[in-house]
Amino acid sequence: MPLITISQDFGSEGYAIAKQVAESLELDLYDDERLKEEALKEGIRPDYLKGLEEKAPGFFDRLMGRKPDIYLDILKSVVYHISRSGDGIVVGHGSQMLLKDFNCALHIRIYESIQKRAETLAQQENLAYEAAEKVIRKRDEEYKGFFKYAFQMDPNNPELYDLFLNTGKISAETAARYIADLARSDDIKACSLAVLESMDRMSLERKIHAALSEHGIFPKMISVEVSGTGTACIYGVTSSESEKDRIVDVVTNMKEIDRIENNIVVAKGMYI
Image (cartoon, rainbow, N blue to C red; front, side, top):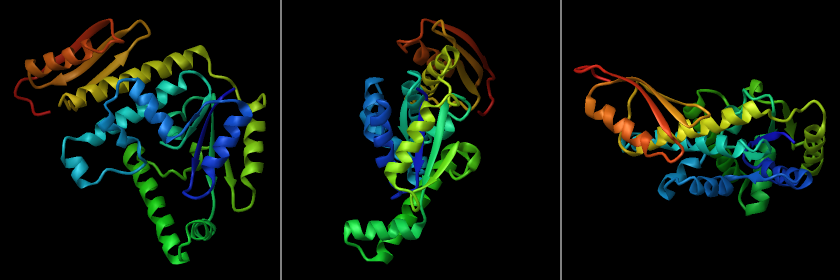
């Protein structure tokens, strides 16, 4: 079975469809709560988990502690971590973007007109149509803002998806059956071992970046690459020996890392 990402317009039944597909294919479903559970298992601090919400950080979030950088690293780490099993369904959270370069992932976009979504929300929540429409538009803008902030791209870009489904015309049940049939087809390939190992390394690299940020280290010119042997190669330039030592200490304390190749260059007096 492949990895499946399902993204949706707010109120377009994407989550209901994802649940039905997961039950039909007997796959794990990774929604917001499940992703948070996986993050906790990976040792992520609970106070950072609000970063999994699909909202762009506001001015004060950016100003105080640069936490948006941590949130995004955590999001990437968790998505890559759960994807390394090679199957499952991830709902939202930029998964279509994070996994777009892996041919074994099937990307689905569920959409519906604002009018129909507002009508449904108004009926479900006993709201006036105008109020429901404002809620819909606000949520849409929040999602677009998150995506633009995180990936510098419009979430409606067709290059991100293999299939668009309009729940204004077809039912959630029909959409779920179609997705399940497509996932079972020979056109959709399983992830190779090399791809799964790549996801594992990418997950750990983002986890290391989050750890550096958590310790107040925000080097603009530092990168970390992890090999399959548990080796972390650190590259880049920093402004002082003390920061270089701090970076090495943080990476050394990662339980998944057995060895470090330190290629950091200190450029004293340089503003980084």
